[in-house]
Length: 506
Picture 1 (spheres, rainbow, N blue to C red):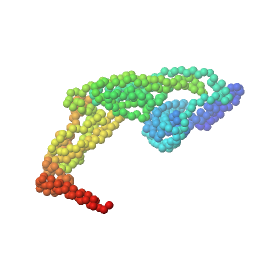
Picture 2: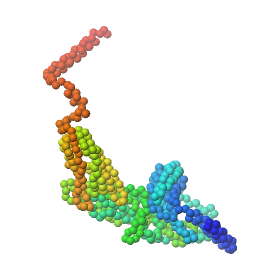
Picture 3: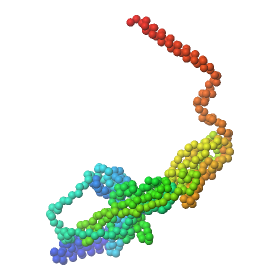
Picture 4: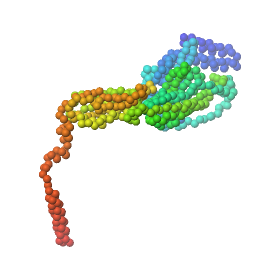
């Protein structure tokens, strides 16, 4: 097959010899390009692997460095996090697709490019890294990039003032560009339109491009724009759990029966702190949109860059007060369950044990407070150590809050820790209050510690000294006489010293 392609290319080149001289040069140029394409297409058809391509090794300070992943002849279903490069900051991603048809065979490529901007000039090292593409791992050896001074736009005139190729392809004629109507929109959506105080709702800001869209668009300085957008968007009367989107990944969705590609740029779950409505104002995202040349040319520009701003619609989420309850202002809101752990259920008086009261579920994990343990004469409970785990995925915020207590039993007997550990919360799905109560029972044996002020295993030095001292009472007058005698002795010694100095011969 490869030999046949070469023969076909040679035949095309032979035809150009038979043409009149005036037309032969132009046709020969196209023939050579066609011949080279025949060779290139054969190579592209063979490649079906994902590749990682690093950008140029020398860039200007105001030029983006890029890392591009490309998949051939299959969909780019998923990819991992692009590496962080010391001395650079990430500045959004761009995507592109292309399809080629050669001799009835279709080949396609899909690429995602991560853009980086240098923080300063200098030489930077890109460490080797691994990137997962479509559930397969690919390695890059890394490299070095030199960042030079900012590049200046230069318009240097043609030294000869004439380009013969432009005359052939009518490049001297003014280019006309047409605007292609886009089928896309920016939207802010919430998972709920009404919630209780403390109940979370998920919020997403995303750009949607329809499957039928023909306009060419790309993101423009997304990081900088998003910073300004969030200043307007974040409500002041809510606690925020940010999903921290670092890589914008395209995702196919269907809205009202129409297929779109969703580019999610921001996602968070908000928890209202009071009954004031949560208001999201209209915000705009500036996109780069390209006009297309009315008469495409083999050479020169075939598109013209311009900007278009897409706006969201304002959104309001209403907030309801919780039902009446003595702890209404202090309870957490969500769906929770209890997990417990104890060092042992057979205990001895005077010996410490550990107990974990773990609250697990969906809700504002950060706001969960420890259960209030009542003071009693049977156990000495100490303030707990606190640890929490929060997971933000699948439009939900879930996690665990761990309260680990240390305690010392004082009296023998059988006890239910449910008498001491109870935690009340409000379940918005069931719309009622519920209680997580310990189900652990312990058996305590040993002598009563109720009147033991000091443990025999850790006697304080002060009390040991106190018991060793005499309990004989001294009269207060005796102390006064001791002070008088001491002061008199000091005065006598001072007088003797002065007399001796006065008698000393000069």
